[in-house]
Length: 337
Ligand SMILES: Cc1ncc(COP(=O)(O)O)c(C=O)c1O
Image (cartoon, rainbow, N blue to C red):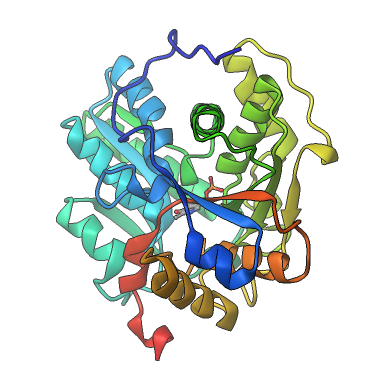
């Protein structure tokens, strides 16, 4: 079976398929399992990352609806905001965001790129973890009203690109991994992925269910347990179900379909752990591949810890989904002192 998305509006943004590369020196260093890296950091679009796949469907939808301005939301160092701004520009649209962060946030990393892309934004001072409930939703609504009053037809890309269209794009990524592994004659035992707004993992679960894949999915959360619920996100089960409906598929998800680990978050979202810093340096020095301090470094630290604890057999094939985030390396160099 292959997934048919031909009826849905979609634009071409990401450089697909992204490479699936063996990581021989990391594998040897750990003494197994066999680690492969799915290079979704190489999707293109203003330094790349997982949001490029999602934005193909959101921008397709926005253009079909005749929108002329894109609005989204995220923290000041959001990869999602940076890539959404770039996608809007690629199709000649205005880009706007509600940002949350320090009102004196330094113009570095993603926040610098946002400004080069001409992002217009409203900054809410504070941190995503401790804003009064409903404030962000209210700010988004106010922003959309202002855009409408100034004659724009705006389109809201949900925070993190978490919405059925975004999840759908990662069911296609699961299909891509399956096709590549067949060609490479490897049998994927595990796929390990960072989890923020849960859309990437949900999309992979959808792909696994619909395509009947054997790979075990392990999501490594970069947010403390309960963040998704307090941010008003649907459960992973519901996210998969809703995305399945776009393919006219009825999908039931159970706890056996994936694992979600909260053991590698440390003190909270965006606060790097010592293990994350070590994992960033390890991958850089073993494979010449860079991961970031917020998402991919923490999930890689989780994968390394799981390997050391004997979660995998030495011969298992583990695909690590590198979802990008590179600009975050330039947001606070002092963490590497
Ligand atoms: C680099 C990177 N990796 C992973 C994620 C998490 O993906 P999701 O929000 O789909 O769980 C994000 C989300 O912003 C990201 O920017």
